[in-house]
Length: 309
Image (cartoon, rainbow, N blue to C red; front, side, top):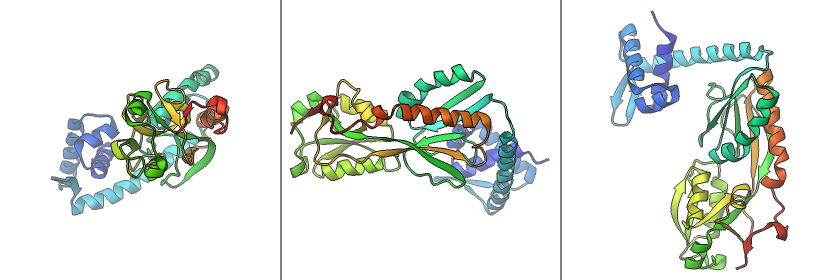
């Protein structure tokens, strides 16, 4: 008899291409994923995936099974969202995903207040640089800084984040202040990877300093903060982190780096679920209460730790 769980493991392996990646998504061991695939292939009496140097690739039969399994998965998730949406109780699990720095410095500190008001709501906070699927229930709520690629989402702007250019005093003593008119030769840059949410700010930095050398790329904003604070180079950082890091100085620049929107995302089928709606409102209120910190006035000289070129 065909087991839906076996199909779920097969889909994860077909999508991600390796036992380790599928196991991570499913929160199980690699051996469990392999065993489930073997069980499904034995039940259907056909090979579904071929193992290649590039990873697991569906066979012709595997492609057909994948197509049908994805239709079944979509129907199952739709049913789950519909039933969940009828739950009127303010209790249960709500999964929230966002970038690492936002999780640690903005959302996590605020959830103590949420728990005080709604002790039966449990938050699962998932810091992740990639966009988790709300449709596939990898998360219920997402807080991001760029428009999503997923469909069927309700997207709301709840705030913004200002950025600045930072460096450590020891780094500036060794390399001198950056000469933007000359393209910042002999300087080091710390930037974000291309698929990160801060590509716009990294593009601004490389345009401002075309003669500088990129020495570190990362998908972690927190890693960029610490790398720059330890003398690694110039980094374009969120003001709410850079201004509070005592080992960094914010530099004057000819043009300010672009800001980023803070977007709150939820699947359209889940937005009216009471416990999810409560968490959406809490995140919105918390972010708006921090607007003075997230978007400080750039012209307020008393609130700036800057060095003149």
